[in-house]
Image (tube, rainbow, N blue to C red; front, side, top):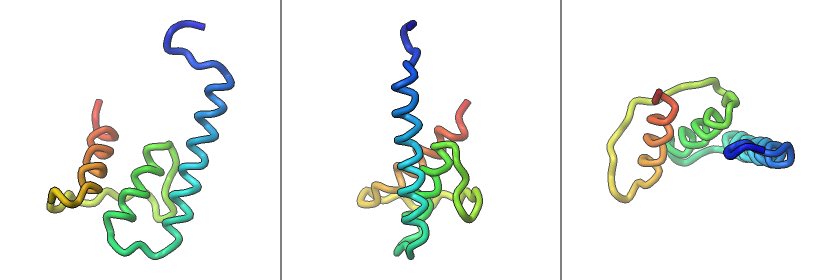
Length: 85
């Protein structure tokens, strides 16, 4: 195995973890989220893991960024990753 390549066991573990993350996010999207940024973060994590969220892919316009709102920084970091080269 060359440097950077994954063994079949490692690939299976990563795939299993991705499935669990997507399932977790999808289940939490079914319940009412108190803030729109919670929903947006869950949807972006689903997209980042190669799936499509239940209400399809929607990117929201960036809003205010306050020090206390750590989630906005995570949302914007994921968006920059998804739109990067």
